[in-house]
Length: 433
Ligand code: UDX
Image 1: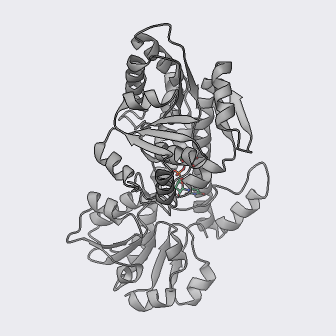
Image 2 (image 1 turned 90 degrees about the vertical axis):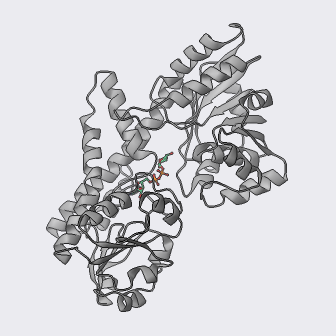
Image 3 (image 1 turned 60 degrees about the vertical axis):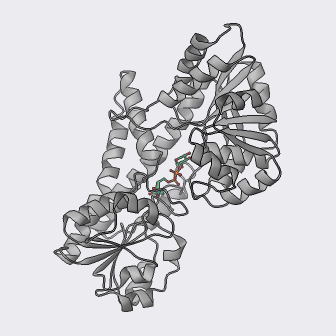
C-alpha cells in the first residue's frame, strides 16, 4: 500500500520505517528541512535501537521517501497518518495546534478521498474536532473523507519491536471504507485487532498510559513502605505479579516515571476529565507521588552523607529509561537540580544522553561530564544510579569501589542484588529493599 505519514518524530518515523519494512511505500512529511536532509541520507535524528539500520535498508529499496511538502505527501497516498506532536500546555491540557494545522492544511489541498488517521495521543473526541476542521476548509464540501483513530503504543528503546509485534492494535473507525483500508494495512499482523468507534479508541490509549503510570506510582509507595518495614519490594512485586489479574509488568519501583508520554498523558487525562466535570483525583495522586520521587531520593542521599557541599556525586544514567537518548521529564533533571542547590559537584555519565543533558546543564564549576562510567566515579563520595542501562548492570563494581572516595551506592533502579554489592564492601541503598 501507499502510506503518507505526517510528522517525522518518534512515532512518525517508527511508523513510516516499519510500514516500509513491511513492504509498503511510504512518504514521510516533516516540516524541518534539516531533519529531512538527514533522513534522506539515512541518518536518524533520534537514537532508537535498529531504527537507523531499517531506515537505510528501506531507502536503498526505494520504499521510503521524505519531503517537507504536505502537498506532495497528500498526492502520494489517500492513507494519511497524523503523527505530529501534542505537547503539554501550561494548564496541563494537550496542545492540539499541530493536529489542527494538519487537518486544516490537508483539507485545503484535498482533491479526492482521504483517510485521516490519528496516531498521536489525543484527548477523547479529538476526531470530532478534526472532522469539523476538515469540513470547514474543504474546497469542495462533497469530497469524501474519513477520520479514524489508530493509537500507537510503542515504547522508546523498543519502538521497532513494539510496532511490529504489538500486544494489540486498536482501530476506531466510522465507515466500512475506512475499516477495509485498515484490514488491508494490518493483514500480516497476528495480534488481536480491536475495531471500535474513534472516541473509544482515543480513550483506550489515554487510559492505558494513565493506568501504567498508576501501577508505577503504586509500587513506589509500596517501596517506601518496604523501606520502613524491612520488606523487599522486588519480592512483593513478584508475589503480586503472579496474580494474572495484576501482572508483574510496570511494577518496578524506583525513582519514578519520566519520558515524553506518561507525565504529559496523566496530566492531560486529569485535565480532560475536569473538562467533562469529573475529578480524577486518583490520577492527581499518581502524579504527586511521581513528582516527589527525585526529592525523596536526594533526601536519602543527604541522610547518608550529612552535607553534600563540595562533595563529588557521580550520576550514572541521564535518559528517562535505557536505550534512548531522550531526557524529556527524566528524573535525572530534578536530581541534578537538587544536587546543584546543595552545592554538590556533579560527575555525570550516560551512554547516549549526555549531549542532550549538556543543553540543560552545560559543563561548569559544579558539572562535569565523564567519558565512561569509571572516570565518573573517581573520587566520588556516592554513586547514584538513575537509569538501568545494561552497561551499569554489567559494570565491574570492584573497580568502582577502588576508584571512589567512599563506597556508597544509591540505586534508583534496583539493578543489583543487595547481598552481592554489600559483600563487595559497599554501603548500598536500593529502593524499597
Ligand atoms: C510509554 C508507554 O509504555 C507506551 O505504550 C506509549 O506508547 C508511550 O509511553 P515510554 O515512555 O517509551 O512508553 O517508556 P516506558 O517503558 O513505558 O517507561 C516510561 C517510564 O516509566 C520510564 O521512565 C521508566 O523508567 C518508568 N518505569 C517503567 C518504571 O519506573 N517502572 C516500571 O516498572 C516501568
